[in-house]
Length: 111
Length: 125
Image (cartoon, rainbow over all chains, first blue to last red; front, side):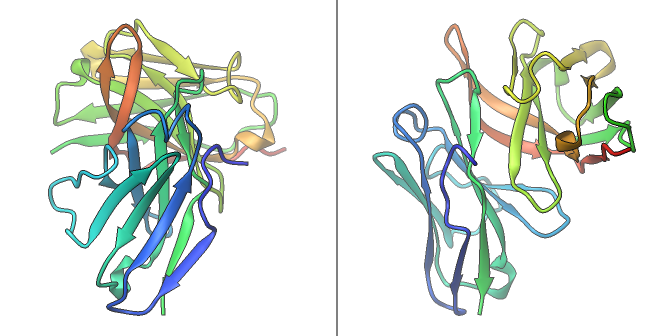
């Protein structure tokens, strides 16, 4: 059981917007602005898409955005494209001894 | 260009040991916190261990505490993970990962910005 809770799957049609949630506690997501999101294609290396809740690294499309409310962070992908089909993981700093926690991952299917 | 190249993976029997290495290049290795993150087949990501730039601060996931040892050699731009008393549940791809941190007496990992290609460690008899 992962420390952060994500839906196992989400889907959307090309051009639509989807949102992936990531729910934690006040010891991680709710207590710090250190939520990050990673995209992973099957058999490939995870790639940083969003850091510190809502910041995009250079080179990441502005169709990807992040936000947070209370103990839940969200990743929104607008203007869905076929290439967005991948697994997405959230992560957060935690004040527990674990230091870092990940969500269980969400499989995005573009219909 | 930042590069992280893992090596040392391979089949090991339960109870056995293995040492993973990660060769870093393209950045000032001695200035960065480094980590190991693993991913079991078909499963999600799991943070394993973290080491500060000067090896002063070291952290482990509960699942590996007492069995794994993280270390680094800044002169060789290398990160290591000594894995002992391996179990079937340790079977995973192990990634060497660079982190951006904040420090105010304790390490706060802000995010992971560069990942290696990973090395597979199957634990099976």
